Amino acid sequence: MSCLCVTFDSHYHALLAKRLLGNGYFLAPTPRIVSSSCASCVECDLDDGEKVDDNDVGKYSSLAGSEGVYILAENGKVTLYERK
Image (cartoon, rainbow, N blue to C red; front, side, top):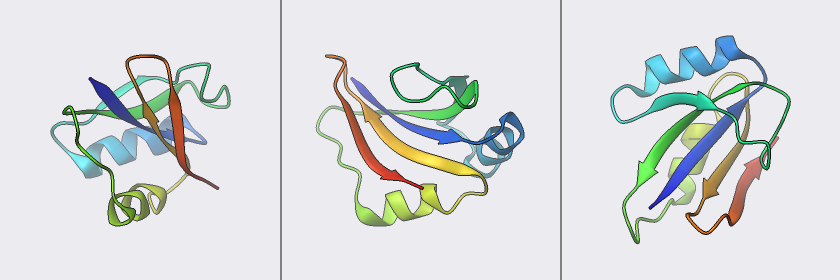
């Protein structure tokens, strides 16, 4: 199972995003392979074969303080969707 990871420039912005996005999203430590600027990110598990479209990426990247939108695969592959 892969997961969607949205990184932020501060822990405060990650907390706000978690509150706005609601259930199904959780705060997690930002993986070092993705970024080391902030210790927190918001993650969401993706079902097998679930796609992230441009509307989703736009929604996540428009959150206050967001830095990047990534997909983290089980095999360790990281896909960058958008980075500010």
